[in-house]
Length: 233
Ligand SMILES: [Zn+2]
Image (cartoon, rainbow, N blue to C red):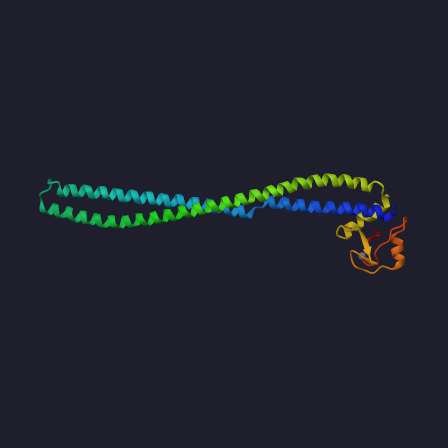
């Protein structure tokens, strides 16, 4: 086995591990941060608050109208009940009845406004609720797909780390040290293939002698430009 073959195999497993770990991180982040869902929940909550307060206002407007109608009934029953004969008193009762009726008109207007506001708040709430439901059902599907992918990735990682152990075993310790250092320096890629006499990672041209060295069983050859270990496939 050439010195670079073992490292190349190790590199392949490490690259797969890197990709799987990155993907797993992304999935975890997505599952944790559901901005869309949080927004929809907040919207329902605020619509609920507004509906409750609009209903309270409507209820009190209705009660005021009711109380006013009772006052008018009482005044009119004194007025037309035949118990009052004094003209001054009758006149006062008439005036009072007229003024009560006028105020009733204002109260009924307020009641109508409150009713419209309560209805608007209710329809905003039901819109917010159906928005939340559709986001939840969409996320249920997406989350299921993400959770499936997550468990597949976790299994992949287990298998890959076993493969990694097996790939690492036959490699000499000093080569492993060089490999690990290069992987840290070169964004995870320490070993590179070359094709048509150029480095597959950086594109640098490789001399015939260097290409020959890369095939040697005994020593490692490095790309003169990026410094990665060259592997002749
Ligand atoms: Zn290179």
